[in-house]
Image (tube, rainbow, N blue to C red; front, side, top):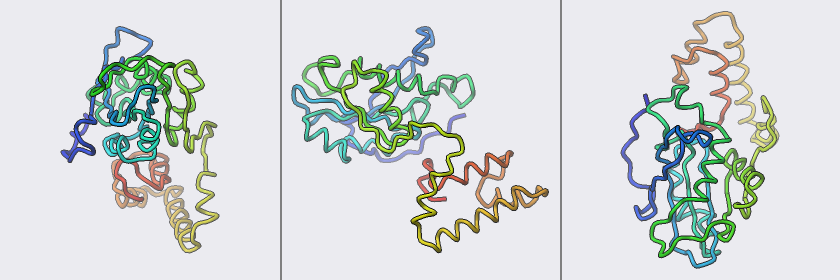
Length: 254
């Protein structure tokens, strides 16, 4: 089952959202139904002819990123260009859920193809509260897609796939070249990090490796308990989890 969302103060004034867009569960199957796709929008600075800057929050609950519609580089850009800024949540994250749990039946459409179609559908059909009149459709209204990391991938691919409705993109740190076991990601830390920090990290890695590659189950279980994942069965899943230096869900360094 999905965990109940914690009650928290709104990230932005309610005039900016959240709003909910009826998004198809499967863009290739019109009988699949729809889900409530959450987004925030700021049209305070809009003047006729201004662009719309769209940011897909990527693989995370978008609540903390709602403030980007008022306080961010893309908000500044929208202000300078007399435009609108939108922060949309990625399907299957946060409140933009397709089903009641994370079972396979509800995650079949959690993929890049559907995510891109989600963005294209919003570009074509979203209605903005507080605007006196509807925006002209793209390309008359210029849409600029922003994103970082995976979200940057989506931005780049949107321009490639939908040049008729996407005017420009800002793909920050977008790893558009796929690679399995991308260990080079950490080379910057190893090369430029403080020596005592690098040494400490390498010592921990060697210590964990000795346990995981060992023959005894008890030390492995003790190690998993230390990291708060005692119920994690597969050792490679544990290693993958702990190789991430920053946990996007808890916002704490590992």
